[in-house]
Length: 586
Image 1 (cartoon, rainbow, N blue to C red):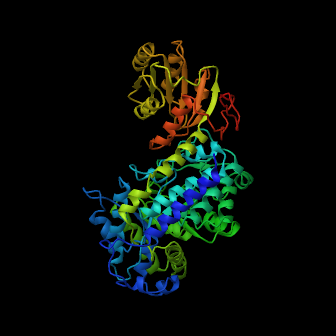
Image 2 (image 1 turned 180 degrees about the vertical axis):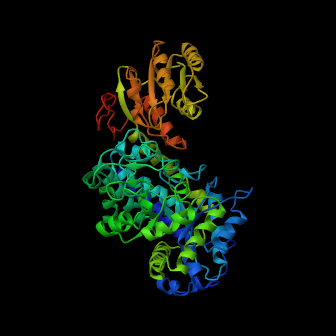
Image 3 (image 1 turned 90 degrees about the vertical axis):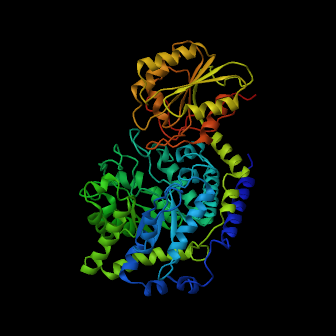
């Protein structure tokens, strides 16, 4: 497809959105010049000189917002901004683009109604587009591993531009992407399809591409999780992971994507709650001076802002607690503490920093260094100039037809046909019945199959991710009433045995069976006798977040659309990195 036209179209939409968000809606914006911050030039040092210690440490804490029954931020969120002087927020998940824009405007009004009236940096976790957090009316884009399968930096750039245009229109300045982790461990329970792949060169190339694209589009890009979360076997949301590889492996395999991002000018980096034993065997990277100051700032020369991952994750909270960990992270070199818990944790985080300043445990110079970086980002990314956004514009920009067409094309370029022994493509024009079976999200996949084929569609889904024998027997019975079967598997690590048993049982019916990995592509190793296998990289590990674009793209490939992807990882013992089939021409 003509990607030069695609990129130009997306860039134009991004610039258009950025221009329109500059004009605040009259009803939402306070009078011009109503705050000292708005009236003064955007000079970080000038703002810093006016701040008290309490206002400074507030700028160093990012608070997760909380909502009232109307979906708007609640009074505890207001108190975080006005009493704790919080400088940035990670929003909860506003349902629609219009609501997200109104939500951001309310946050900015509260922040403006403070002594200094400093604007907020509003952030989101938009790894696969804004739909990652704003679930309705936004453009779903492939996970990073899908972009790795597509292998085209132009597509990765387009995906970043779409994300940035929608995010800016909704009032966001900051995105926690791209994921720069190299997924070298197939058993990794938390990174998986969030990574571009297992090869350092691929991850470096696409990380740098998206870092530059976010910068072009006026969004703060934030590669994560430094110095790498790709070789872990534990989920840091639940426990403290450690990696045991040597320093040479760290520098050869895991650091280059971050180095590439720094070279590309990325303004922020997020830390990993992972113990990197080759650097500091005692504490995770988030709390380690050797990692953040010695390695990231010293060896790699990073001058930008360091933000922690969520500090209420069990890897940190269960081992150190909010107060101790907050001060440790800043001493280690972090500039912004992500306070991802309830309101009392925000109070603790701000209080811990203020107490540390007053006791001398944190010097004024160290605090000023971090606050200056926060203020610099607010100046550079338009938080003072573009404080408010238009909800109507947000609704128009998000999921507009051009973005949705491009997302669909990127999705087809990502889907990988791994194996095909005369089973695929299914005939889309026949009146044959297709059974869609699986352990997760089969309703959405069945809808995509129904849209891609003329025949009727049946659906079966197990009650859990590990189907019992009685459930499998019911799926086999329904297969007997169908002409062909598409069976979806999902894993966030080792595939549950019941899912592999389900595939084998359906294969034994003698019906044409194609298996679809909706998450990690490694599932094939647990049922290698299946005669057709497709990888879609659609579903993330921890939350099983739905990706309609990838479900639709996978269904279209199953019914004859040309797949574009090649494996960005190795399926050990079966298929190498770079493997991918195409349908014969015609």
